[in-house]
Image: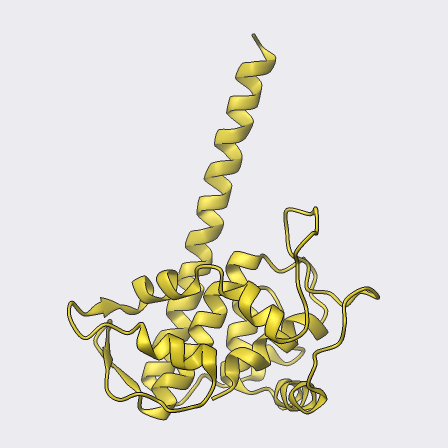
Amino acid sequence: MITAHDLTIVSLEVRSDYPVERGDLSLALAGAELADLLDAGAVSLEGRLLRPIAPPGSGDRLLDAAASLVRREPAESVEDWLWRRGRGLAAEYLATAGASDSGRRRSRWSVRPTADRPDPVDPVARRRAIDRWATGDPVLVGLAGAVGIRHASADQVVDPEDDGTAAALAAVNDAVVELAGVRQRRSIEQAAFDNIWRGM
């Protein structure tokens, strides 16, 4: 139950054409947690609704926190849970991996390696994540693809066999697309506002 940590390391280590948006990464990390919770039998899906089954007992602070957020009643859709759990999640995982975006003045969080950012604190975890990426693990490749990190053989990677995991990945993709739409609307609104002020 380590997919979110692996995704964090991949986001730090693997080059992408564009900087990874922090909000996108947060949603994908929530999806990674959900995939692991489904795999562990800690939660289940009834249609689009998420149901708790049993605590995962993983010993991982972040994953156990994710499990505790799954509501018994009222039941919550996968999409709503991703948005609620994903809020600020990238910062927590980046800090755990030995990276931080605090103090950076850029509006976007670029996950490309830089000389001033330390390597992940656990070299074993780094090797595990990179090996998993190299073998084209469908869950990891799918989540990374949602945030714009494309695997070299992504077109040949098979979909996850588990329907619940496949549904979680689809929900992450939908949420990332929705977030991009929100950013675009805000950008248009800000540009229109700036034009009004310039014309006064």
